[in-house]
Amino acid sequence: MVGASLAVGVAGYHFIAGLPWVDALVNASMILGGMGPVDPLRTTSAKLFASFYALFSGVVFLAAAALLTAPLVHRLLHVLHVDQGR
Image (tube, rainbow, N blue to C red; front, top):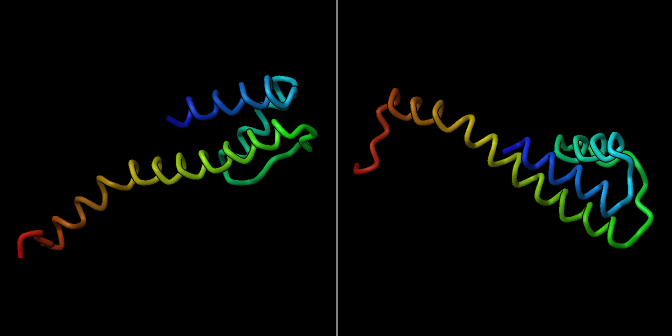
């Protein structure tokens, strides 16, 4: 999921913003990691892409965190004997 999201970001920064592949990778990685963009964006379409990609990355980050912690939380609920029906 994270790899596919990174690929979308790299392709978008390369083809929409016109950045070289390595710079596109750095920007996509930084946005996906929650750090923010590195290179300034000059065109309106590049800025719009960066905005939507940042929102998308936030959702992917939350989804990945939920997928990683769900088994632990589920097990914790069993250990604490939390029943849904009572």
